[in-house]
Image 1 (cartoon, rainbow, N blue to C red):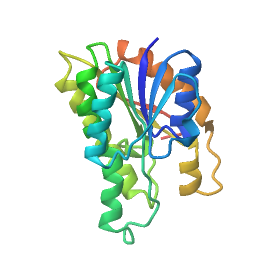
Image 2: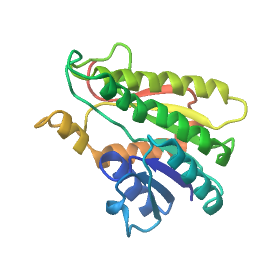
Image 3: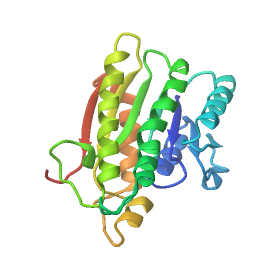
Length: 224
């Protein structure tokens, strides 16, 4: 059994990852600002952490280092999305999206890496909107560009740690029926449920690093 650290764990895909991984017997360290949905789930250890607050993330990393000792899989799933025309989005809104989707990922990963061994796996959850050549949508300038930055960060870290490990890969998700999607696009029906996507991500997180490193895999049935 493995120890998985999952961010954005209180709803959507992150919540389903926690439930399914814990049911399979894995230990899950679950991060979210709101941890009430996670309480009482066997094998799930919830921590209320604001990922945009670096001192709070540092305190969390120290706590799990003494409590768990090691982490096998880090799934950077937390995300922030603003659907607003480019001419209307403020600089602070743009920066807030990057803070969660890029800067917090870098901070948490830097702090967790000492707890991971060569065979560990860091999985960054990106978006098809952050992949060059994919369909793009108005209103998502901050979100999609931040997910593009996450893709490049994944490739760079895989290169930097290719000798010592762990492995780094990114999954570029298409539309998944989650609360975030409903908030951004009310009424839109995605082809995949959060539970279906979570099942795929868990399997990839546990096995994918045997086949991939520094790769960005599109997980979408749409064209392009």
